[in-house]
Length: 167
Image (cartoon, rainbow, N blue to C red; front, side, top):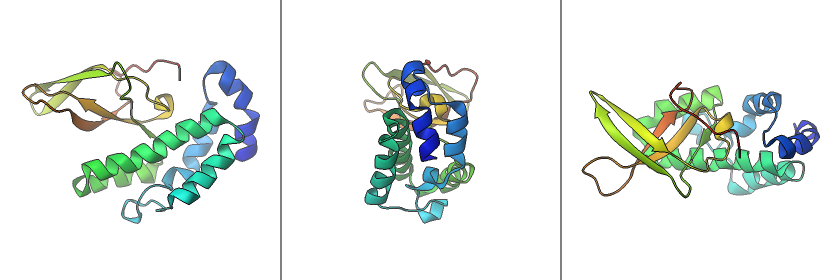
């Protein structure tokens, strides 16, 4: 993929978007599985191996490397935070080579409201590198009656989710 990544780097910087065909190729590649544990179907690679892969990608397109790094570290983070009770969910993400992101930058304000057995999240989550390529986002939100944020993973394919077309 390195030649393809390099070939689209200028266009990625100009358009602020990694080519859809390249994203599809990345999602088919085992690089998507580097940070997952074997129990999840991941490759359980070390930070050194992941860093070396990203170094090679960054030399060709820093934007692609940044978005991919965000996926690899946030996937590992979410799996650790949500734990073994969500093993099957995370196995599915690895198996399908889906992308995750973590929009929780400055100005993020997400709240929740219970609707029967479901929780409706509303608000804005900011600075989710790779969100345009992701199927899932870790969302920190405030729940009424709680003083500390909660975390969930939200499906970005839901038609009620809107993602800004910028980095």
